[in-house]
Every structure is written in C-alpha cells, then in structure tokens.
Length: 397
Ligand SMILES: *Cc1c(COP(=O)(O)O)cnc(C)c1O
Image (cartoon, rainbow, N blue to C red):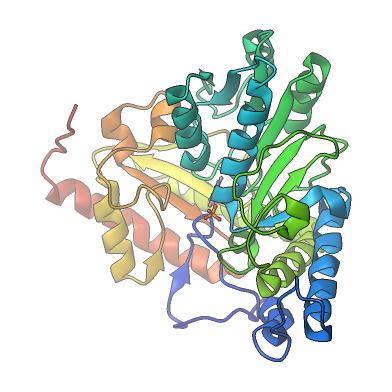
C-alpha cells in the first residue's frame, strides 16, 4: 500500500495522522463506481437502487466482520462525532425511562463525548468524570467504585487521540457486564490500529470513523449490540432499519469497509514498523533539554508521539515546522487555533504553561525512516531558537 496514497505535494512530511489520514488509493478505486454509474438510491426498488443496496449490505457485512459483530449490529453514520452522540444520547434517553440517569466517563475523552455528556448534565443527568493518572491510563478499580445503582452508561475511549494511550477496554467491558451497565467505547483512534473484538471485549457500543484509517471523510459506524435499547438520534426515513434516517452514503460505506479491511490485514507487521519509528522519534526528541513525554511509554498507539517542551509555545513550534514542510499538531485538531491548553494534558496533571508547549506527531504506514530522520534533524534547533527568541509565555488564568 506504501506509495499508493494520493499526495498533494511530494515534499510534505505529513505526521498528523490522528487528525486525518490520506485516502488509500485502492479505497478510492473501490468507491469510484458509486459516484458514477452506480448512483442509485439504496432505498429504491428498481435495479439501480437494488444494486446500490446490495453493495451497502456487503460493506456492512465486511465492516461488522472486522469487529467480530453481526451485520445487523452495524450502522453507518456520518462519522465519529455522530456515532458518539448517538451512543451516548440514545442510551441516556432510553435508560432514563428506567430511572437510570448516571453516566461515567473520563476527563480526557474527545469533545464529541465530553460535550455530549455536558449537554446531558443540563438535562438533569449526572456525570462522573474519572481522573486519568499521569500515565494517561484509567484504573478499572476506580471505575468500578464509581458505579451506582442508577448508572446507565460507561463511556471510555479505546485509545486517546492526543497522547495515544490505550485503555484496558476488555477489563472495563467485563466490569460493566458484571454490573449490568452499558459500555460504549469511542474507538475512532483504535479502529484500524488495534485489534477489536466486540464480543470478547464485552463492548455494547463502539464508534469508529473512516477518515482516521485511510477511508473517506464524512462516514463512520456505530456497533450496537443486538437487543440493546437505543433511542434514535436522527429521525426521518426508514433507512438503516428505521434507526438512522438519511439517504445511504453508499460510496462512503463501501470506502469505510474497504479501508477497515485493508488496515486490518497486515496490522501486526505494520505496527511493528510504526512502533520502531515512534520509539526512535521519542528517544531522539527526549534528548532535547527540558522535554517530557506525555502518556505511558509503551501502552500507546504505535504511531503516537506526544511531547512537551518547557518554555516553548506549541503554536509557534507548529508554524516553524510548517515552514519546513512538516505537518504536525499541538494536540487535537479540534482545539487548534484556540489558545486553551489541551484538556487531555491538563487531565494528566500538567501545568497550563507546560501543556502549551506540546507537540503531537502521529505516523502512518505512509511515513518513512527518512521522515523520522528529517524531524530529528529539524526539531532540536527550532526548539532552541524558540527558547531564545520568545518572550516568557503569558498564560491566562
Ligand atoms: C476524530 C475523532 C472523533 C471525531 O470523528 P469525526 O469522524 O471527525 O467526527 C471522535 N473521537 C476521536 C477519538 C477522534 O479521534
């Protein structure tokens, strides 16, 4: 697959794969017919529609299989944010009828989860936000202790989008099952990078998004365990067996399935290569004085590097890297442009000053050892320069 991606400019070193990934060429090829001759509405009865429907269902089967789920348990959505919203709001609203209005989550979830939980608090639900420890990993015992008789849902991400730390999902799933609590995991960063088996891991609801694993943007999926009561989020037509309205995005669904399958094949080999490049970057960059690694050294996504440099402003660092053709991030793409330090880094216990000097580098299989060499050569002098140039950082309280 290497070299098969569509690149805009050859000179660019793209290391922001947690924000989005380039579309795989073979995925684009699989999708193409559904933009052209196979344009039928999958809900129409005539042949062109039936043909679209057939491919939609093939995509569903393939995607479900990659998760260890049944096709009837997999629903296509518009992306990770919708899947998270649907899982959380749908569970909360259906469980409220049974008097269960308590939700447990963690402080370092994606905003698609945190802001949804905050909305539910306004509706009268109560939410427990678990602390993550300095290693960026949640303690299952603390989660278990937080479960109450009125707990409806636990929502904990599989892998974090900023620091890449991997949560003990199977252990959490087991605890939730024992206590009769529904378990949702935002697996948007994990899908395509880590093995998923919803039955083995006792997952009731799982969100994923195609553009995070070399699929197209604007299409995602939600696994919903059979028999689970979930209110609808989007009302309208009877698509997705009456549970998610809207004309089916057949090209997107085909792309999601193709990308998920492609990333699952050869995962182990690819992860070994990514881990080696990741560790080379971490070792090299930690040689820079007054730097620190955020999140556990090993229990993190194979391609995730997240560091802080004292007395450096993250945004300036990104601009200087950009001038060298290197696309990286200071944390989450969603908070880029805002001056607030990352809520994830603050949840780890970092000071606001330290959190402002963060840099996230996320690799994909498209990256090469030369990319790593280039970053290792370019970054240290940039950090040094910024430290001598920049006035002391003023952080608003
Ligand atoms: C990207 C991301 C989302 C949002 O997915 P979209 O498809 O962009 O809406 C949600 N959760 C995590 C962990 C993510 O990385």
